[in-house]
Length: 394
Image (cartoon, rainbow, N blue to C red; front, side):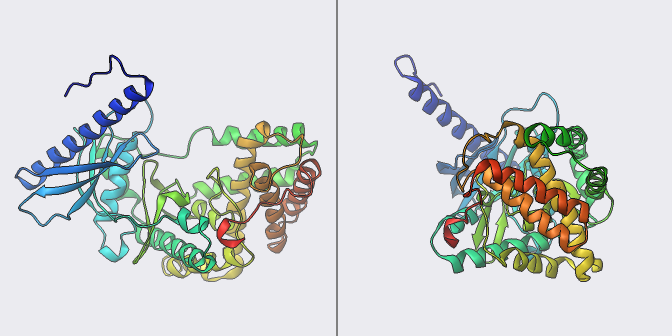
């Protein structure tokens, strides 16, 4: 295929590149499907789904097949192999393999229909034009948003419960595709160690030794052998489809096995790693925790104890707030009043909530320190520095 861009502007060149990427994805999808089923399979009417990661994501229609394939499929093509580090294609392919091996009612994602490491392509079940969790949170129907959030929490719990004890399987599949088991990024220790100096420089608050100890214990909990299960890692509402069978997870480019409690921190800090994270109304977080716990308590009976669960969740919440503070506080503008939809407002709210939750579980040093940090941030950012609700709850 030749594209004449001699007289086109930047937009024309970009459009040509996108067209070529879509065509390459379709060709790779046809190739892997033909090898998988032993007969030529033709895909037409490709639709670029504009994935945010390194893959070209395309929906295409099946027109020639003697097999009982769905009418439409989703193709994810990773044309570029990374020069170093983890390979997002390998991570995603292995993640989908892990789930496709499970019973359909335990599969919290689309089914993997075919994949190939040579062409670096995945062919997935198409879940259709269903809304994302982000769509529900930004619509004006609070009841629908509540149902979607509870479904998300249940699906997350079912995902954890169905993959607990499967770490060896995941790593074995990953080795077959030539990828090393992905561990926690190596700079986490360095980031944790840097947070006290950032808080001192920006807010003038020293970090007590007791708080440093609690953070070290939180980091150790996140790496412990207990409560390990598969994690999508990218827990943002635009990566979740709200289907009739419940919320389904997408995009496993960073998927790996880690402590489920790292994910569970998002039940306290909803989608905190997402740049557009906002707040949920009172009681919503507790309802989501209850929905998640109902799915995992059969695998981890310790979570039937309210105090045990609250302690673990607060420890995970501490680590998540700590890491986000280390990543973002140094570059935030504390010189003017914050808008209620800003990351500045998010930090105020999350430190304030941490102070409250730490007080409930008698983590006194953390509670007092978190309250001081929240107050210092609020003093600089003004009276409207509380994080706004998602539009569905306004």
